[in-house]
Amino acid sequence: MTYVVTENCIRCKFMDCVEVCPVDCFYEGENMLVIHPDECIDCGVCEPECPAEAILPDTEEAAEKFLELNREYSEVWPNITQKGEPPADSEEWDGKPNKYPEEFSAKPGGEG
Image 1 (spheres, rainbow, N blue to C red):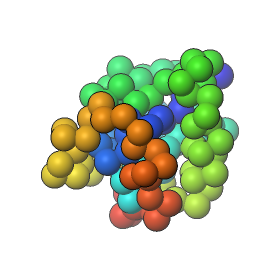
Image 2: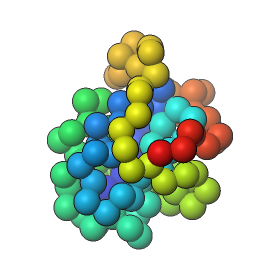
Image 3: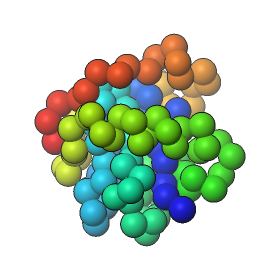
Image 4: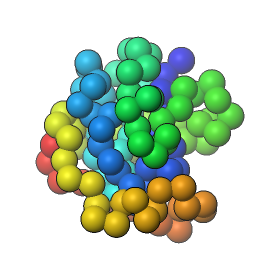
């Protein structure tokens, strides 16, 4: 099992999860984060820290389709080890449906 960042992170990107990760397995895109599934130690401390409830274990059905996205982009986006500033409008995006693929950006984020 691993943890997966799902659709609700898109345009929210609160980053509370980054601060608690003991193995620094988060990677930053322009408007979301992903977890490297081979680096994640399945400790689960990130899941309750996410205000958007966007982190799920890969055993949950809602996480399955995002596992490959997390794997793919964790290979190309920069690693993030410190919490940054979320987007100014992040709370407006929390819980909005259908953010992927309409709002997803494949561009890398700033350096963490």
